[in-house]
Image 1 (spheres, each protein chain N blue to C red):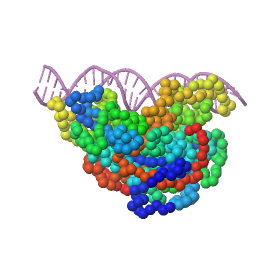
Image 2 (image 1 turned 120 degrees about the horizontal axis):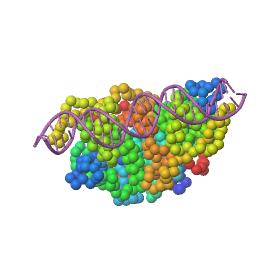
Image 3 (image 1 turned 60 degrees about the horizontal axis):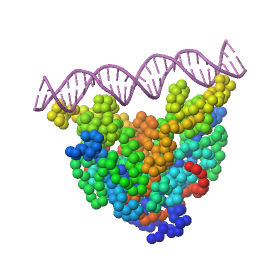
Amino acid sequence: MGYGNVSERRSQPPQVGVSVVILALREPTDGGHGDHDGPSLWMPLVRRVRQPHLGDWALPGGGLRADRSLRRSAYEALASTTGLPVRCLEQAHAFGDLARSRGGLPMVSIVYWAFVDAGGTHDFAERDNVAWFPVDRLPDLAFDHRGIVDYVLAQVRGRIVHPEMVTRLVGPEFTLRQLHAVAQAVAGRDVDLANFRRRMLASGMLEETGEKVREGRQRPAAVYRYVPCADGDVGDASGAAGDVPRGLGAAADAAGAVDSGVWADGAPGRRVRTGSALSALTTAE
Amino acid sequence: MGYGNVSERRSQPPQVGVSVVILALREPTDGGHGDHDGPSLWMPLVRRVRQPHLGDWALPGGGLRADRSLRRSAYEALASTTGLPVRCLEQAHAFGDLARSRGGLPMVSIVYWAFVDAGGTHDFAERDNVAWFPVDRLPDLAFDHRGIVDYVLAQVRGRIVHPEMVTRLVGPEFTLRQLHAVAQAVAGRDVDLANFRRRMLASGMLEETGEKVREGRQRPAAVYRYVPCADGDVGDASGAAGDVPRGLGAAADAAGAVDSGVWADGAPGRRVRTGSALSALTTAE
DNA sequence: GCAAAAGTGTTCTGCATACACCCATGG
DNA sequence: CCATGGGTGTATGCAGAACACTTTTGC
């Protein structure tokens, strides 16, 4: 079916979809590529299989469906790209400039970012048209996706030194050195170890398991687990709208339907067949 | 126009729209209502004229159109609600939970917030189904709009003490006391005047005009104007995604990774008649 | 001079940085 | 005992909070 004439198209809603910046840690290869010798941050991209920008690398994404929440849509886009376990999924920003759609239909992208668990694998399984890249050596990206990645990375880097953030990138138990290595990898800069230790412990959200682990063959390190502050009970989905600006953004989107008297009423949108096939996963978000 | 059967509906995209939390300062009425005696924060709501939630108050909003950027859509929703000059318009969050649409079709709302200039008017012009309320005494709202308002207010309150934020709520020239009163009104709490002064001046973004003004009949106060730091040149629309808040990113968004660039996206073509701070507007779109 | 507002100084505290230092362990 | 990593102590600088204080004006 066609899109009708120009004036009809104008009054129709633009394409709306979600995109996800997926991040995972990769253990250092022997010939480490980066400035640091610890783990480094990688992200998967998908190769476009249609015009415009055919053949270019782009962020994973998909269309919205009426029976999926935004977050769920993001999750499915994520899951169709990598099967790795999801540690964290948060909304970053919605992008909807006209200029960004150059070469395509007008498009609004609601962008999420996610941490997934590479679990020590050196080789990310690469399927279909998916490939992993170190975030500091990305190829040229389609549309304005490079700008989106930069935006998201700035957001993530600024928050990675907080316990509730960095602990999402490691397993349930960890040593402070592991945590530190992760924070450095994500932040892309040196972080003083001693001060990092103190900040983590001072947060009161780390609990010593009592176990010790020798990573090298020197003195064993204490093992910790993350325990979110008990006082902050949430559970209230009623009035509260999810994560607050700076807070520990664990919460999901709040919800709501909008539509107010002011608007020009909507015929239900046309269907978007944008996407890479989104596999229907049933998974707790 | 039917919606088709259930399975067809599911595969269709949900409704997507923008909503705007519009904020303005109101000079204290004689019988001040709040805790403070200074100005107070008010916002307009619109009464719903159709089901669901018919008759309830709701956030102004509108649908997306393919020939409008997100920001532009938000601007138009804003303008259709109040004719007051716009000082600031920024994206807050996209809400898209399934639960939020209870009583309506599935709905995704991309929420903006705005400062508009009430310009000393004690009476906000109320049209149609629009009415203004003090933010701390809102009526019951439709859908999850109350949660959205709370979310936005938390975001705004956390940032109002920054010069680039609070200056948007006052005219081009102001005294530090005026600025302080505004910050207190928005933050909803007492802010130490002496420390506020120092913070503002230390930011280096306030320039003394040389004039003095007597507000009461005591010692006249110095008048300042806001001058954004010169270093933050922008100009680069190339790689950057349209709606990205760019600007003083690095320093500003340590933890919150919040935005800063107010007019980043192409401003609406019809430029706002505040005339004030918008001189440097070059519409890139 | 007095009241009211403008504007300054001083102290205290918390936090982050930088870096020196001691401790535990395996070889 | 020594190399290596685990873990602690200490000095410094910055930023905000609290609050006492001085200065300028109109009456």
